[in-house]
Every structure is written in C-alpha cells, then in structure tokens.
Length: 413
Image (cartoon, rainbow, N blue to C red):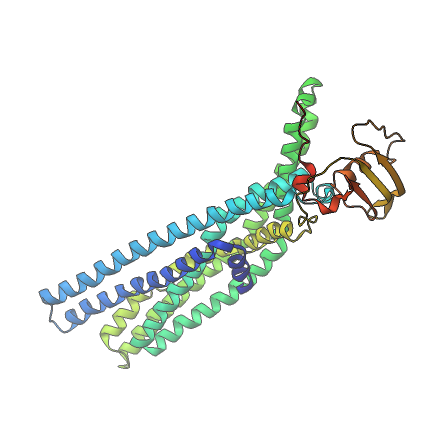
C-alpha cells in the first residue's frame, strides 16, 4: 500500500507540493478533532467534582469552538489543495500526452487502438482527478486522525489506548486482504473500460454506414456486449468488496464495544477513575469514525494504482529522437541509400536506394503490401529505418527536429 502512495505522489509531479501541504493540514485537522475530547474532559471533571462554574463552561466552549473552527478551516484547505492539485495534475498530463504522441513511432498507434488511447486520456485521467486524490488523501487523513486520537488516549489510560492501536493493526491486516482481492480484479475492470470506449468510438465513427445499410442491430451488439461486460465487472467488484467492508464496520464496532466494556470493568474494580471511564466511553464513538469512512474507499486504491501505471506506460514508451536541429536547406532533393526496414520480424524493405530530385514527380508502384506507403512514412520519419539512410537536401532526416522536418514548404509568390 505504501508503494501505491509513493507512486501516486511521484506521478503528481509539480503538484506534489500541494498534496504534501494537504497532508500536513490533515494532520492539523486530526489535532483539532482530538481537541473535542479535551473539551469534554473539562466538563466531565467539573460535573464529577460538582464544581461547574462559568469559567469551566467558557473553557469548554472555547475549546469546542476552536476545534470546530479549526476542523472547518483545515477541511476547506485540504479540499481546495486536493481539488486544484488533482485537476491541474491531470490537465498537465493530458497536454504532455498530446505532445509526446507527436514524437511516437507509428508502431505505438498500431499496437494501441484508438479506444485504448482515448480511454487513457478520458476515463483513466478522470479516475485520477476525481477518485484518486479523494481516496488516497481520505485514507491517509482517516489513518492520521485515528492515530492522533489513539495517542491522546494513551495519556488518559495506556490500556485503552493500546486497545485502539490494536484495532488499527487488525484493520490494516483486513484491509491488506481486500487489497489482494482488488489486485486480481482491477486489471479486468481496466480492460473492460478500454473495450467499452473502443466499442462506442467504433459505433460513432461508423454511424453513417450503420444507418445507410440498416445495421443498427448488428452494430449495437458489440456496444451492448461491452456495456454488459463493464457492468458485470463492476458488480463483481462490489460483490467481492462488500464482505470486507462489512467486516471492517463490524471490526470497529467490536473494538469500540471492547473499549466501553473495559472502561466499565476498570472503573468498577477501581483501576480507572470515573472521569477517565466516561471519557473513554465517549471516545469510543469517535476514535474510528474517519478510519471507517476511509476503509470504505480503500478498495479503490488498486484502481488508482492501475490508472497511474497506464498513464506512465505512455511516458515510458521510447519516442523518436527529438534532439535534431532547425535546418535551413538550399534544396529539397530526397535520397535513399541502402534502406532496410521491418515490421517486427517481417522485412518490408530490403536494400532499397533511389533519388527524387527537387520539383519533380516520382511514382512508386508495386503490389499491395510491397512497401509503397512504408517508403513515404520513412521519408516523413513516421518510422526510423533499420539500416541505410534517407536524406533531404543532403541532410539525414534524423538530423532534423520532427517539427522542422514536417513543416510545410514556403509557397512562392
């Protein structure tokens, strides 16, 4: 789980600072949450000692007001930081993906269909900006709040404080098992999302043909099948996660009940003061509150992990050399010398040489699959040759920047 958090923060790039600020403010939020227990303790102490006075009331009221105001302020700051960071991070990544795709070899687009690429820039990025920031930071905030309150309880009674800490450890073990289940199912959901986007795009792009030849029923089959598959995966996710979520809820209730029971027992046998017993009973209702909410969302952590991996794959894909120069040419003669090229293991062009003088027309003829389009793609450097060289104006196409190579020629007037 720690790897998921680290991967997400590393992926966030320039927005990492905002996420860290959000975490620091979340820690302050936890402290303000814990202050409520102090306010309750002041009132309980006064009631038990029969010493309720205006000073006591005002002290408790001020503590509560500070707690409420602090929680409201920290909640607002964390929400704003998370929202801005999430949307900005994904907006930047979309722009970076668009820029990077200009320099990717054509093989990338052959191996990844339009549905796959579109799914990454839509569903996957939306998962990160809408779900990931909320899930990860809610989980961490819930954990921080529970830990802070548990540490505070240690100062009142070590035994009850240790009980709350054991509850956290048991929760982590149970949550780890849920993450293992999620690890098996999340890739299927990712694949189903890609297939659904691909089916919808294919249907929309071919809608004129579908209507012209009355192929609505046939065309709908793939879309309906993809929707059903996506629904089934989501249903499977819910069905597999609900038992774990129920178990987490029962776990927290049992440990809260254990806190209450032990507090009563310790108070009756004289090893805990009445005020501490009452304080522990009240604390049992709030100590696991945020962690319980965080546990409900933690099932989505693996989907967040998958989303980061999918986007990272694009940036890990090697791009064609973009370190060329802006070259000013005196002529635009095209020359190929001993060019060879293969699509994976299939050789398409073998030791081909030719010259195309500037301001001339050259016809490339041959059978289907003979490499005519491939030669044009190599000249434009949509692919890089495996052997030999292609030059324009006496300069190897690899020496140009891709932008300058593909820039239009000036039109003479």
